[in-house]
Length: 115
Length: 112
Image 1 (cartoon, each protein chain N blue to C red):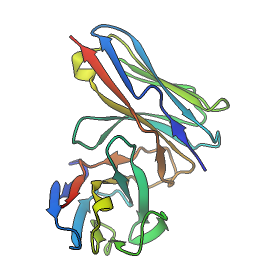
Image 2 (tube, each protein chain N blue to C red; image 1 turned 120 degrees about the vertical axis):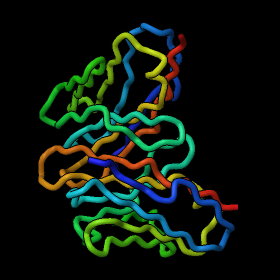
Image 3 (cartoon, rainbow over the protein chains, first blue to last red; image 1 turned 135 degrees about the vertical axis):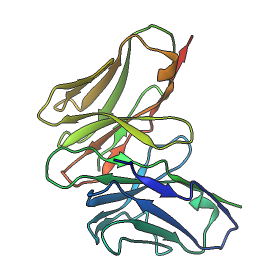
Image 4 (cartoon, rainbow over the protein chains, first blue to last red; image 1 turned 90 degrees about the vertical axis):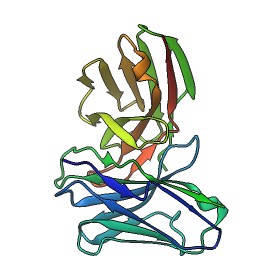
């Protein structure tokens, strides 16, 4: 169990640029979640995958945001035409299969700063 | 819509003190509740998960309780240490695969 891995750890970019983040879940975890956390707040849900299927999206996920999990393993989150308000920590979590009470395991996040 | 509240936002205690962190939620129809720890600039570390049918869970110096009907959970930390200084977040889930809804967290500082 190597944990959830997120890359890059930090991203600084100018307003209007596109950015892409990657999340590698714990091996054999078929559930994958993206959250966004701003300073002083708890994480807010963005989207959820079960295997390669995107099953739920938050209204926070505007048209500029897109997430994929093409082979049911790693996932990418892309933000197009970044805005100042996109500055946040983007967290990925994964969960083992099954209907039982398995916890979500989080990565260390990607911190995005928009200049 | 589920809302999770954690009060106070910050807490400072001397080393060795036993302490209780509170969490409340508005919709009692939860599937489980998780407590997390977050160090500055880091992700979340899962501490304890309580199923909706359970009343408490323990891990080392940590004990979490759940009163689903009143919409409350507490995290008890025994014999606090400076290394316990972090932000503690609680989160609830409404289903097995559901998203987590988080509180804003309580930033704990344990003074040597």
